[in-house]
Image (cartoon, rainbow, N blue to C red; front, side):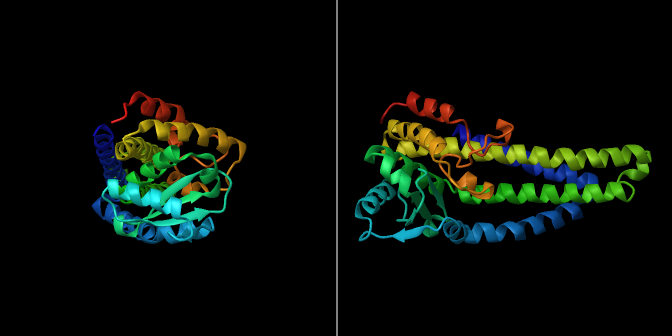
Length: 284
């Protein structure tokens, strides 16, 4: 419940930032235009994300015939989670990782790499799959798309602020001296997108914590996922994955090899903290 409330508060903060910068630059009209443009841009990502990311990583669909053990494991967990059976894919990568995507429960996809199938035992793999099913159940694709749309609108308004500064100030320039108006617009153009990115990443981290807890609820065993995360952390450092920043947030552990300049901009919470939280839970 705590992470759900936190997500709602962060989305509220993101919306408030959008209204603030919109009011300073273009009023309600500017907000509406930027939001509609960002919505159009993110609609394709939301609707076709499964096709795009699966093709990007050359994932191959598997069935009960071609991968019976994996299929049955996912089917059992989907039943426990009260979810329809998702489509299953295997990525031809030795780096152990996994992700879930799809616009809703009836169009969901769970994908795992060949590497994760090799290094995890059944209990650990169940923890990972339960985590991914939780993303589907918690509608995280929709939430991340909403956050991306609002953040995108803020970035567009910030760009408008830059042009407004170049051509003589913003909407309140008549009430301020020219230098102050331009400086204010430039500051807003720089600060607003950074603030939006920080909030957006905070939402992503909050959803990861929630998926960990929800996944433990499906398996009734938080230790399986904790052990899996420990293995994935070590293995991903040894065998880095050729992943793109635009899809990094989908994976259960961050596939990017380089460390973030600041933890604020990470799409994933610290693995040590995730593992510690899972270890502190009791099986139930």
